[in-house]
Length: 423
Ligand SMILES: [Zn+2]
Image (cartoon, rainbow, N blue to C red; front, side, top):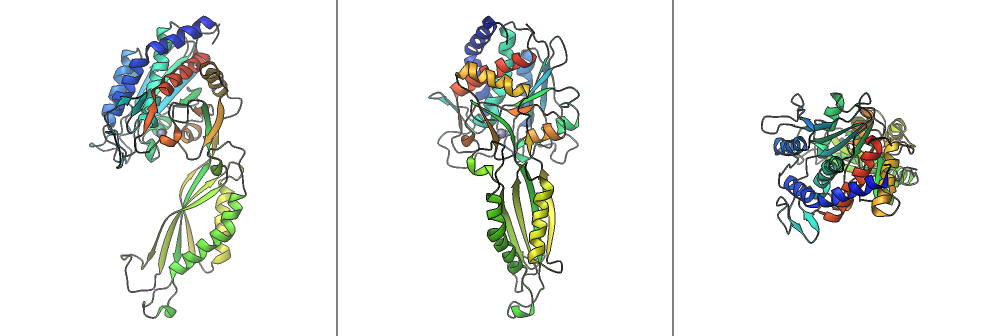
């Protein structure tokens, strides 16, 4: 951003749009886009698209009709709006997911009423991440109202299914080439990561299943069989004794928060053992036991090393094909280059708006960044948006109105920095 008068004008425009921004976010909260199963996606996409059109975006609704998640009852309708400036590039794409996790019980307010009270917008999805979508839309609109011309292009999307992997949402837009290194320079995902923090990526994920095999026998004479559950017990013991301390000792240089997630970790997600193909209760020695594991690996480790380690552990305790390993999902770690223009634009903007330096963090879990990096090949991607990370998915979720307005200001300044008129 060059002349100071522009900055002042832009921030003043965001300030005077305050009520519109809050209303837009509250309206979005009132559309119950619960996933699973993926309710009201079309309504939410239309609501965002109609607003974008009113704000002079060209809008369309890429629908993932060939994906298994899509159905007539629960169509996977995404929305993309584009506003071209003097040139197609540079192009900054702001992406928010429209789906929310089910509210659960224990709320003291209606989770879908979009109540604004005591400076807070309450509701499921208020923080994760409908406030973020509102911030993106009104950041772009405030630039127009301030009369600042665009040198490049702004694109805003609302996408489905982030909470279940994002395959019919951001991954679909990337597969279709809508987000692609051939047209997209920067991606900002306004997830709730606190208004003064820039999120530059996440650790890797390796979900795998181990099946332990035994030999069936009558439950009254277990000595005639071989228990698959005991074999699984041996594996869990080896994990506890050898693997867990080794993982805990590894620390990544990626600034993952909270601190405990800066190490490699392994969680046992589920375990099921018994007679193969039968109900858990059976009068037999268990000949099959399955466990599902969630290994979060560090950039410094890499996937091959993480998998190799599991294979060696299995080999060290098993013999004769006692254990079988199956990969369920692999997400590689992502990290935005530290000299990325999108980081410095947000850095400067946070300093201007909040008067303090931004903190760079990485997320403990994965989010749509993975698709942008891996499928679209766009390396300049970060998450930055309003809302407190710890409130996401909680009972009585809320977003501070002040955070929403401040994040809109930060995004507006950053967008002008990236694609605004050249001095
Ligand atoms: Zn989210």
